[in-house]
Length: 182
Length: 216
Ligand code: SF4
Image (cartoon, rainbow over all chains, first blue to last red; front, side):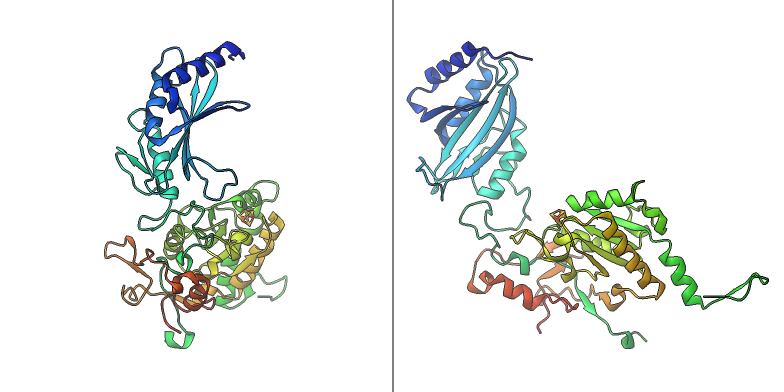
């Protein structure tokens, strides 16, 4: 078990601030992780820095997901955010990179060449939010049917769908009256 | 079935009654547990509740060896063709139990992913209310199915699965010649008609076995 060492946290903050400079839109210290907010184009550099900087060693990719801020009460830099969570086994600290992605151009560089585990999570974000990951080897749907059109976790997608429930492939069951059998 | 008397060791019955009795007391279930209800189904089959008291202990994970399909859990639109395929593989006579609110009606999940009641697509013999139903409710449903089996009744007998009706132009669903499922629907334009999907669902898919896609 790695004990809580405040100097590690301060070092992480100092190093990220020095690396990102004014690209860092904001930073927040949550109860059990640090969150760094950047624009989508800068996120990959920051993730790579967190992983490759020997004194930090954020080599454990925990998760990648997204947020749609369309109906969020507080204003945000952009509508979407792609959230990558990393763990440093060396420091025992979690770091989160929140990358804001514009509604009109929902694209962000893929992390698959840094973390192979990002492959399916990025497909999931593409599937449900429609955020395109540039450089992803196989950006196809992972949960919804392949020909599904739309990205249902977007806030403007109707909860009951756009007619999918009355409109999807099934077998045909027809009734046959017993008399016809003979 | 009648006993003729204790001195003579024979029983008179009809063949149908004997077969029904045998079928009812050797139900081999095919479990289809996709969600929380599956846990209660498993509990029903374990030692404490012990479904083998009802002759139903041989849990078959191959539909070809099963005669009772237990749908316990949420069924998504993507899963429904799979479930139907499993149902089709089961040899007749066969029965189906819809376990829990989700399988029977969609439950609280009135969303774009979920089937609002599997009985739109499968002939269901017994419905089980509850979220989840307790194992006792499961046995109630099992005994209902056994009663049906004894009488030679099955909802499935009222249906045929008609693969010939797979004209893409006519239907919302079809199968390719190599038996892969293809989606034959255009979901790209949310037209006014599609937006009122509940109406479409009610029109196309009725609960009394009229084919989806056939006009009423
Ligand atoms: S009916 Fe309740 S317990 Fe059963 S699958 Fe649905 S949510 Fe889970």
